[in-house]
Length: 210
Image 1 (cartoon, rainbow, N blue to C red):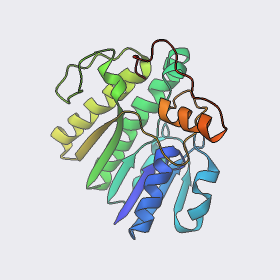
Image 2 (image 1 turned 180 degrees about the vertical axis):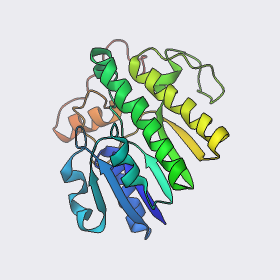
Image 3 (image 1 turned 120 degrees about the vertical axis):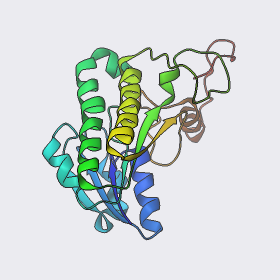
């Protein structure tokens, strides 16, 4: 099968791309390297097709989607603090970029689009475990952008018969994650501290979650 991975040079996208290659699939990556890293895809660069471009450009997105069976849409500006400082760019990349992907995918006859959403859409609800049917309560421009992406996925599934799936990521961790990133969860921060012989720091009484 032929896969397009947007944001394929990022933490999650590069791991997805590598896993697909290991399973014998054909992989194309679309990334503008604003947050993705070239070193993340260096080990398998010769095995992929790389499109260097921006999600906000429909023509670039349309070219990248052409001929693909599936799209794994990981590309985004993944930062709550950044979205608060610059909500306009967050909306352009995360909402308009997602709309470009969905429109191009529907036009190109893609079989399925998997959209990387976020647990941030739940807001500060203390109810656990979180469930898909809980009422969203986004508290940042980033969370709003991800919820908007989900809604666009639903609309394209209903109107254009484009099969879509939205995954609400929680605390993802693993290889190629930057523990110093503003968006890193507590687990990579603890692992990074331990690897450097430092004691993990727990603030407050230890009962809070991140």
